[in-house]
Image (tube, rainbow, N blue to C red; front, side, top):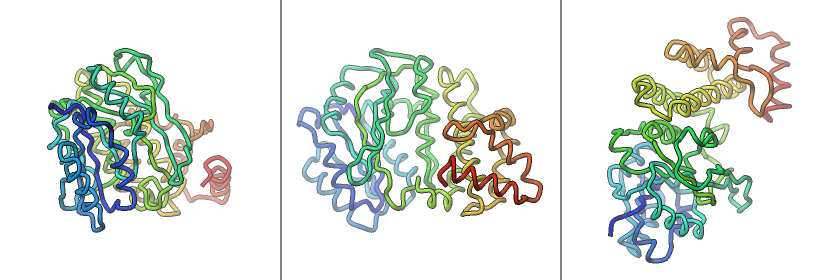
Amino acid sequence: MDKLLTIVIPTYNMQAYLHRCLDSLIVPNEQMALLEVLVVNDGSKDKSSAIAHEYETKYPSTFRVIDKENGNYGSCINRGLKEATGKYIKVLDADDWYDTKNFEAFIGFLKETDVDLVVSDFSTVTDDGVVQKIHRYNIPDGKWKLTDCESVLDMWMHAVTYRTAIFKELQYHQTEGISYTDQEWIFAPMSKVKTLSGFPYVVYNYLVGRSGQTVDPLVFARNISQEIASWKAQQSFWGRTDVSGKGDAENYMWFRLKSRAVYIETNMILNYRNGYKKTELMDFDDYVLRINPILYKQMNDTIGRKGLNFKFIRFWRIGHNRPLTWFIYKVESVFKRRFFKI
């Protein structure tokens, strides 16, 4: 039977979480027959591979383990894409899991639809099961263009399921050897999205608060060069893809490119004395100015996080070539403590 959905699970030292992840994919036989689950073991040093092989042995028509040398997240995605045979494809991180009941319904939904992108709701959940937030996209029933759905501007990779053929058409290659490349997954492929539909139920449960996650502020600070490298890959794609090739995705992609640059630069401005190098911040700012001056100018007019009506990047750009006075340190301290919880 042809596979309807390929699920790629990048896995590195996830023995504590992998059972929960894979158990969440066990649905009735009729749906299992439509699934292809590729557990891409990225050179794990724990029991991740052995755990994954248990499922391959029990469900050989659905689960397949790909053991490979360590190459980080993007290499797992690229290998999964190479092996994928499903009509649709979705990524599931090994420390996350699906809502099994809704996932079963989701498979039924995919059988009845024919679009380039399906957007589903997801939850952010703590390790003890507390749901922090449900992310809803509120896309009406039917088939839509990307420009019809403003809510997708705030897209997370947990929400997306693509038509697999997009990646072959695009000759997509995700940056290897670094983390944070999930941002590329929700950027370049969108240039080929012509139609989309929404599935209005939570499929994906995204674990937050785990020590060592790439979104941990301390980890982010140590690995900021990797975040920058991923952003540069997106900027490179934007620069070599003309407007006509971007189609309906042009506004979406510009928004994502700018918002991520703002996110990177704001975090470095607020924290460069606590893990970031000032030279790294200045190099990134200079790079954006050189490679995309229009975006650079728009970043100046972006207000601070949490809706704070303060143009923080512009403030830093005006003052960063002068000695930081006691007053500026005081302003920074107040902003961080009161508005940014840093």
